Length: 182
Image (cartoon, rainbow, N blue to C red; front, side):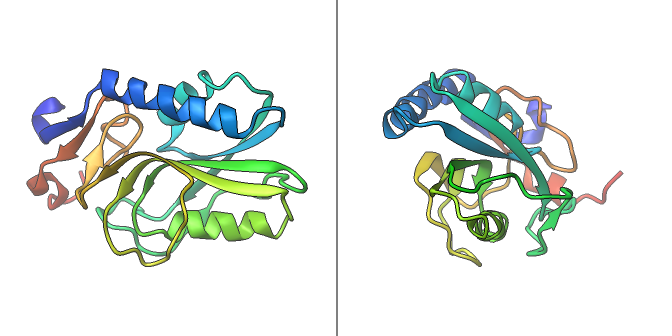
């Protein structure tokens, strides 16, 4: 699978060092409060598991399964939720965790949905934020790494449900993005 990458952007030790820093900042910001974490699945699974183990606070975890890529290399702009009901966010301090901020469609939609529940606060934490013009603007409170506008995989991020299990994050070779799905 490593041969499918143009290059590795962040190796496992670099990711873990950044998670240590993010966890310390989140723990400080939410000290003496209970945190409600809303994880955006499936891409954030590795990120969420590793980050939350570093946060020594009382917290509740809920997950949303949404998709906007639908097997393509670019977001369709159509965010599809696979959940029947939204997580309970009323009067809670909510932290949304997602793997990557790209077009902004997914996080903007989730935030708007959660705001209707009248939480005490909502913050957004992403592992990766692409440096690009977004279709929908989203404020992020915590960012692991800023990256160029490239298609990345690994550490939970996928292309056609592949590469999630890589322990690092790399740029997928362009010609693989253009191949038909098998």
